[in-house]
Image (tube, rainbow, N blue to C red):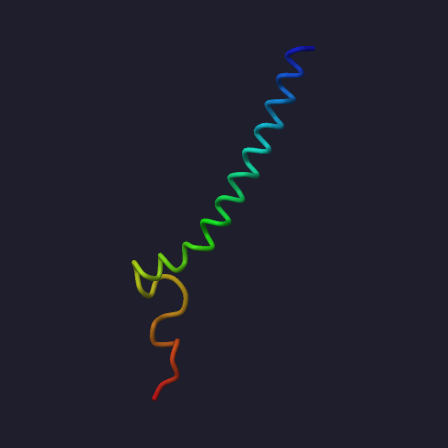
Length: 55
């Protein structure tokens, strides 16, 4: 009985931990594209030439 209780709490903790990691990753990915574009131009988002209409 005690082992079952430990297993259940373990699963619950694992699920909560997974959800926390997911949320943190989501917030991380929201800020990531800007940093990525700053470090490596052209690798994130549209290429630099397509942003502005040709003159």
